Amino acid sequence: MTSDTAAPPQDGTGSKLKQAITGPLLYLFILGDVLGAGIYALMGTLSKDVGGALWAPLLLALVLALLTAGSYAELVTKYPKAGGAAVFAERAYKVPIVSFLVGFCMLAAGVTSAAGLSLAFAGDYLGTFVDLPPIPTAIVFLALVACLNARGISDSLKSNVVMTIIEVSGLVIVVVVVAIMLGGGGGDVSRVGAFPAGANPALATLSAAIVAYYSFVGFETSANVAEEVREPRKVYPKALFGALATAGVVYVLVGLASAIALPASKLSGSSGPLLDVVAASGVPVPDWVFSIIALVAVANGALLTMIMASRVTYGMAEQRLLPNTLSKVLPNRKTPWAAIIATTVVAMLLTLIGDVGTLAETVVLLLLFVFISTNVAVLVLRKDHVDHDHFRVWTFVPVLGVASCILLLTQQSGQVWLYAALLLVVGVVLYFVARFTGRRAGRGHEAGVIR
Image 1 (spheres, rainbow, N blue to C red):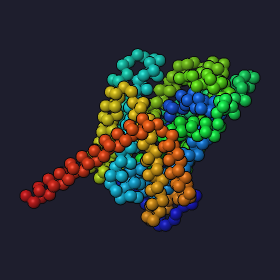
Image 2: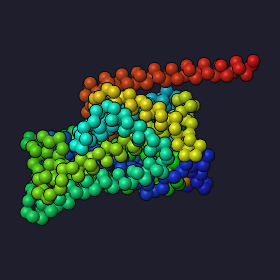
Image 3: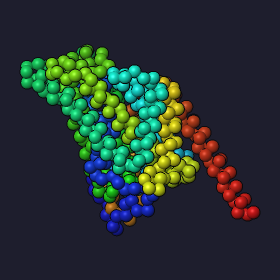
Image 4: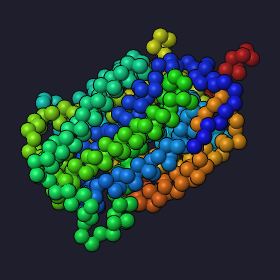
């Protein structure tokens, strides 16, 4: 990978948002979003396909994620503006509805994920300590997340630093207790290479990699805070690849530890596999410790997701893909308050459904379309030269990125495809409604000037 050089950089100039994100904060932002709550249940799901070879799909998923991450690194450093994939699509394709739908997919992913995380926070995790009605509690939780988001990106990411450390500490505990178990003569190392009887290792690894891939996709949220990063051309690629590599190492170590501590039959039948792994180690770690860690992981995921959703909304409003009102920022805090309120209200409404599982799976499918759009945009925008240095990925990387996304799309069920199609129809309707109201507002303004 190389770097295009030209005139001195002009990253972040002219932005209405505050550039408060340093390299370390960005690294922890991405790491905290990737190492989300999903890993605490991931090993049980993976073991159904690959038995004890949990490391294999995790490594494959990391490689697939790095392909698309390379495209994000080039485009973010080339165009460091809030809005991420929607902005890239607008520049590359010059077709407003395509840009809108790319951004709409990101928005749907963000608010749906946040709604699901808020319900998870208000459910069994919180129920360990206090019994409260889930939906009202989830709505209050989202309101608190919005307040932290509105305080400023710096305050939000400082909170993320603490929560990310707690998330990682829980996974470190898993690895350490199993290491102690091994030191005492327990566990079974031979299980780490054992696939289920009769399974084709290659096909089993690919099937499980689809699930594992979902645990890495949090990296794309970082593109939506690029406008608030100091010197993104320098720090973004390092933070992005460093965070993904760190997450990959942690995931593989946790996968190895899980297989050593428990057989696949027990892992696959558990709803809290890491709790069972710690219990099997024989090291006395109280159950409530993991409940707290899970709550923190869920809260951190919700915060980072809502930061992303509000920045996508702000960026699309700046590009006139959404009403200009949504681009308003607080004068002192310099945070997009209108976008924060709008995305929070939508997430709150989604919590009323009570079960957003199927919708969440559909949104993940739509994220693959976002990744295809971004990988293609890299190649289309190679002819567009900017007047500052930026990261440049090898040409074959976005090509392989597109191929990897198509491969993953072929593994989705017909039901999920149907829900995705319905969601896209809703997006198209919203787009034309926005266009119609925008034209009426424009005509009204012209009539006022004539008078």
